[in-house]
Picture 1 (cartoon, rainbow, N blue to C red):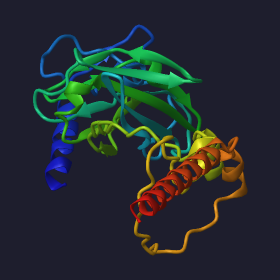
Picture 2: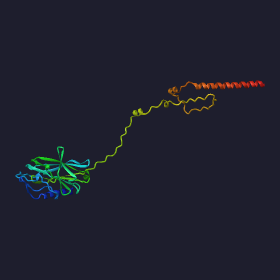
Picture 3: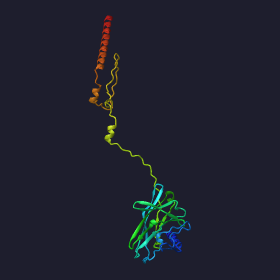
Picture 4: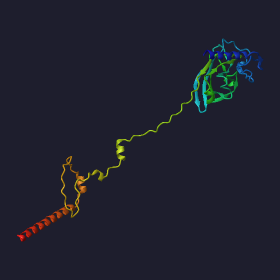
Length: 308
């Protein structure tokens, strides 16, 4: 913080040193030099407040200049945007005809310059780009008559500035200082008020989200599942299959079931009710066997009588 304050003091001292010499304007006012120092890089613009006013009232002190943040640095597409507000207040006991602001931007060496950084005056929602001039690197000065206003005693005037630079430039900025200075009817106003803006943070990368899955309600799931068929619902019949006609019955040793058989549902009984042809076949086979046995027995007795 001490180093940054010292850097601001150097800028202000350079501006004061560059103000040496006087010039006479057509209206008799005296220009004592610019508050802007550009280290010989082109012509220094002249501001209305840098000219003294003949017969001007006596002032007690100088106007006060303050600076505040309107919006922190933020990314807008491929650009980084900062917004600040500079307010000038007159409590000197007399009015000023011209109070001109000449703010400057200060950051690391070789990062910002008038080619990659623009400054606009924002008023009533409309932005007007202001001319800038290179200062002693690493500074940029804003010099425009749009930042000039008359100021009565006890009144204030504010100017909102929008600073825009490329996002690639903003990534290199460790801190951005906006320094306020100006001139009021020929008197230099350098209150040393400055604002340090934090660097712009890159936007976080969006992480892919899994698609949301909806869980079906039990009633809906039951409605969508296929209904069981009649054949699947009916249990298989435990009745033995009918023997083919003419086949001799075979004796089978009955085995006790592991569990007592459960009666088939009425629906299953109805499903397997037939015409009874299997029972008639069994009865005919039994009658044929009985007749054959009787015939054999009758032949044996007759043969025994003959032999006797």
